[in-house]
Amino acid sequence: MANFNLKVNGKKSTVTADDDTPLLWVLRDELNLVGTKFGCGIGQCGACTVHVDGVAMRSCSIPASRLEDSEITTIEGLANENLNPVQEAWKELDVPQCGYCQAGQIMTATSFLKQNPNPDNETIRNAMNGNLCRCASYNRIEKAVALAAKKLS
Ligand code: FES
Ligand code: FES
Image 1 (cartoon, rainbow, N blue to C red):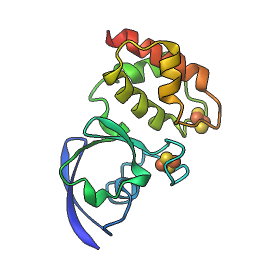
Image 2: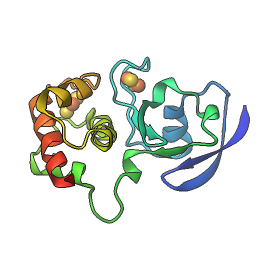
Image 3: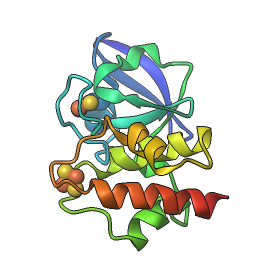
């Protein structure tokens, strides 16, 4: 075990974990940020997606100890007092079913729209392809990303 410093949602914290402890478990168990979900644990489902320096990453597959110089954002840090436009689009189109995958979906969508502000449907589908949803809410997700793009333009 070692102590190291992380900056999560703008706040610096010192955490204690093994060098190889995935960021996901540090977020959930040390920092009580439980909006980030465990799905597969092997980088295949996207449920654990967070932003590292603005880029969507799978927190189950990155050791937290490597991120001392990074800005980490979780679903809890995405909005301030108001929902961000991606969250608003999700709410407007009533996207979630059970909800388990949705934080990861929103984190992927937000990062994607920063890099692709005006995507067509196929580009949206490809970008969201790695985020699995057991409830198959894919059509609503695609529509919500398109609506969020409009809101952001
Ligand atoms: S839990 Fe990380 S990708 Fe599935
Ligand atoms: S809403 Fe249930 S897993 Fe996606």
